Amino acid sequence: MGRYVAPPKQPPTPLEDLVDEGVLIVGSTVRMSIKNRIIVQAMRDHSDFETKLVAAAARSELRKMAEEKREDADRIQLALERALGRSGTALHQSDYRDADVDALALRGETYRALADRLDELSRDADFVRALVERAREQAWDEVSASLEGRLAGDAVSASDPDYLEGLEDRKRLLIAIDLAELRATH
Image (cartoon, rainbow, N blue to C red):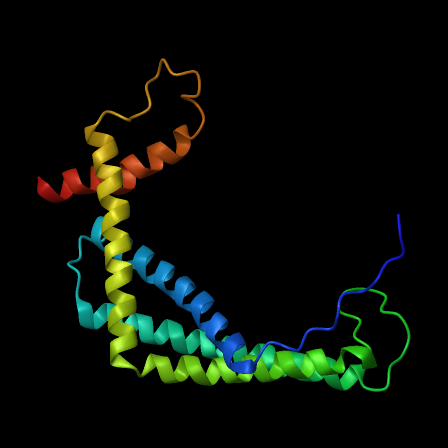
């Protein structure tokens, strides 16, 4: 079998790269939230798409995520302070020791830098505009695919053996969307 040889130690990922990856993840999360908001406002509330209102919501979501990352950094700072000088083997995944201090410091620094970057991006009109436009496109893709499915006859038939699965959800959608639309038009 041979003897295990540990791979060479890799240098830590640069902070800027970590922040860029965090921005991608948060951007995706915010975009999904905004997409869902657009769909709900259109389908349930019968509201027209208003770029300024959606952009304000996107900026607010970015600032909320920045605040969450600052709270994460504070939590990591406390864990780092508790880990200082503690030796031995961890008893569970959050039982940090002196050997974890460098990694915790990098994590905290990353969270703070990401929070600053998210605040900066919340004020960047081009970034917010692009985020809102992508969310609008995704909302339309989702709504149009649903409409195409309905028009193509993809509705569940009572003769389908899986008819009962999801029946309650379909009833709620019928009441919340279809009947609400019917009521609004008559």
